[in-house]
Image 1: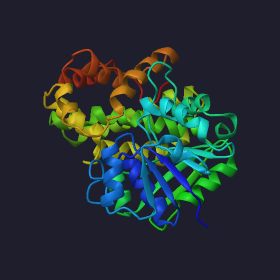
Image 2: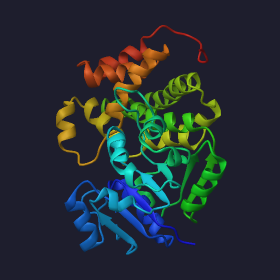
Image 3: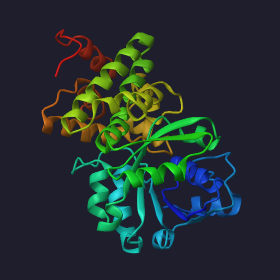
Length: 336
């Protein structure tokens, strides 16, 4: 049975998810901030800016009219960059159905409030949709999902019925969806892995080898788990798809934007030059600033996050930052 879906955000990930849903027979309205992107989708059946080379299903309609995109849709998929989610959803909220479900596929922490998307959406949405929130995360490069390569993700919701409905909405023979009620763990795993990917990329750019990268991934997971557990997450979630799975992919995959930024920083390039060449958003940059503040607020030690923050915002060379991690006082591997 098909159902109308509104996807808010026509970047690579939003477009890939829209295409997945349309291929299942659902009519999809894909909202874009940029008229040029919407026009290319309508006329060429391709997102030439963010997902070039992928032929889009005819059941996708593209628009820059936010209210028209969401009105009447039983499901809303929020895929805007994390720092824009509040604005987009607040503008859309007046036209969203009272019984609509909202699925977040954005990964990040909001600057200022330090909230995950769960907090942002709960505040920006009316009570009805806010009670039917779900959060999709896991190791899933947009380009590979668009090519229908095998992918597994997790959907988190505090409402089991919503989790099950979202699982059925997205599940395909090439896109496997697991469910959980651990919203905190899934969201923080998805957001913070981008910070660790910046560090892993720096290690690659510095030529430090596979050992250093494996250490950063493993100790990065420990940092994520410490913060997430302090905020109520189940530590086992961080060993799953939204934790370790997404972390490995983002730290090692060459399609990772955050890893790319880290590699270039490790090679000594200034951050503003790297970003000037990128069309896509590297969520880990803003998330680093927010995660550093959140760790301080919660009094959680996150040395990798702190060193990435020092490179991005305090002018520390990447080599000095990674040397600092190696020179920290020795301690047991498991500590709190």
